[in-house]
Image 1 (cartoon, rainbow, N blue to C red):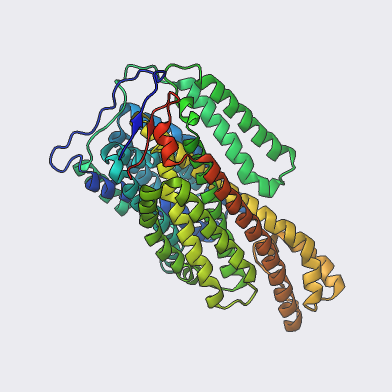
Image 2: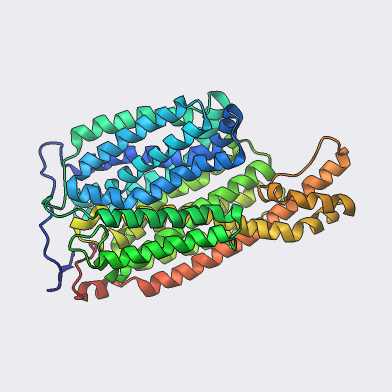
Length: 540
């Protein structure tokens, strides 16, 4: 049964305008298919670009710092625009802004492929991220508006399945395109997907919005939020290269946090805020947002160091590395709908800890990996990780969006998507730092144990950055015996760093499971909630 309670202190707002079903328009399942195309395009793009970066650098003569900005410009724009994109959809029309985001993503993707300089690639990647920030939150906002509460968890499960599988398939598709066609096709691939998304969506999506349009738009809130998120995410992504204790990193993160605090204080005084602070009075929603961050810390951070291990330590090609992780994709294919069904039956308070425990098991099982582990040692971790991340994804969406009023569906979806991006940025940056710290303390000892002379081992300590990426610092003037020793010692140092990273991640997953149990209300508590918030309890 669905229980909706509203306290007397809830602010008066216009009733949400629901889509009117006219034939195929407003059909929830057709809407799910339509938004899945846009979701597929964005998530696929996010994971294929890492494979294309070396080819972009070689073709355009880009430096390592410039290649980092190919990724960072997209990430910053995406993170800064998610909540704004959701708010625009809620107020002016979710269908319109979804279509606008899809169209913009297609145009900027083609522009990236046509760019003749790395500067052009960076600029268009930032614009592509802005379009993704408009598109992404409106996918869930549309689903929240058209699906009845009894079916919403299932819809989010399928949404999560598309997200997880497209992210996992990215390295395979990207590797095939880079190896057999050209890096530009990593971006051109978005054009046919986007055109199909546009045509199908225009045919089946009904417009929905949650505002009469007479409220004053919160421009100051937009500026404060965007500036705060830009500074925060910039500090996070630069922490690994600048050092986490550097003035630049700490200053950027501190500035971001100060601006976000100012944003929160400002929003509490607005009649029509960009991000209603009342949403955070619901502890299930707040906990769900934190769990979203943790889930993508695990997912994107884990995939990052797994790919380094497979390609640079084990010597897999990008395509081979992608194919070897197929068990993760297959597991996530089943896990997301399964997670949605478990969430419908038991609630996110049960489902989120279950998924996090599975992710912790995956991390701890990687402690058995060595420089020459067999595939039989690897695939159980892939399956557990795919199940864990896939189960948590629809459960956190249910905790966030399911506990928000329908009128704030786009904003809640933007909040979830923003936490997702921050979690992914933290995962890659923090875990690379953990690996680098362990490599720095163990490299000399591992090299000498592998048979590298002490004097040479001291010189190779300067190559710590390369070893952190899994690359052995061999040179053409080394003898075959010395090369083998350097490869062995460097591999051992990297694996030692990987073990530190998975230990940290596994412990965080277990802590997160406990926090989810404590922070997310049970079904009985949700039904009795009467604190002035609108509380939507998913169906039993």
